[in-house]
Amino acid sequence: MIIASFPRLFSVLNRPPPKYDGHIALTWIEKGVLAVASATTSLLNPRRGDLIATLGETTATPYFIYRLRDTMLASPVGRRILRDRPRITSQTMSIQHLRTLPENSVGRAYASWLDREGVGPDTRDPVRYIDDGECAYVMQRYRECHDFYHALTGLPVMVEGEVALKAFEFANTLLPMTGLSLFAVARLKPAERSRFWHTYLPWALANGLRSKEIINVYWEEQLDQDVDDLRTELGIERPPDLREIRKALREQRKAAKEKRERVGGLRQD
Image (cartoon, rainbow, N blue to C red; front, side, top):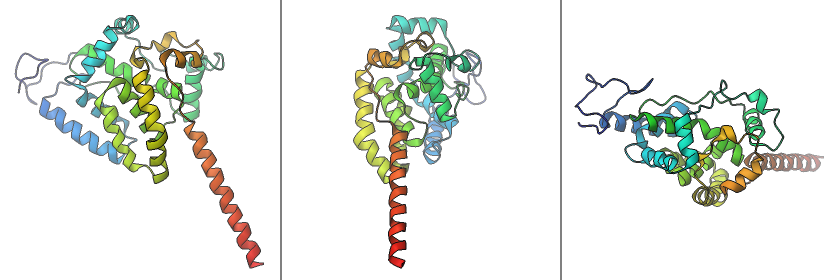
């Protein structure tokens, strides 16, 4: 089998050398097997971030990751990101400092979202299966910026929130993995599916299609900016607060249960 990125035949026993740290060259058959296996297993267990990462890499070539790279090359900011290749980790971005920024700043919103959800910036797997080094960085950049997308939209890390954000990302980036992730809707409860179809999917498609390409945001340079101003600049509206909706519904169910118990107690008396 001939792979466009490599001039000679190769197989499992005859692999080209890696093109960057951690790179593993795969045949198209191997990529296909990994894509199917990771898609199936991640659907059964949506919390397997490593499998979702593998699905993203094995389905991004030969077209989609190059299209996203070209989107960055067409933007002055995107070109600077590709030239500088910044990374978003706890070593490059001090969360403690971000907590001291003005309350409605991008950096403070990002840090507050991380604290609220109990996550950190060091949970993103390194890219391994994309052959082109520059495109591998584009995927790594998308991956490490994912929590900024969460902070910008306010969507939580629970499956319902992740599916909504993936729908937004699909409309904005066209990466296949983000679209395939929507099959996780089948795992939602009926009320959650209804919210997705009637509220969050329409929001995701409308905002993802009309907003600027979020891959071209140089987040490191936006930390002091007012987060509402950045949303306006990008053309993104915040969806209804999912955690608040779920909290209100839990309180309603709790109040209804207590009322039924009180009524039942009175009848017994």
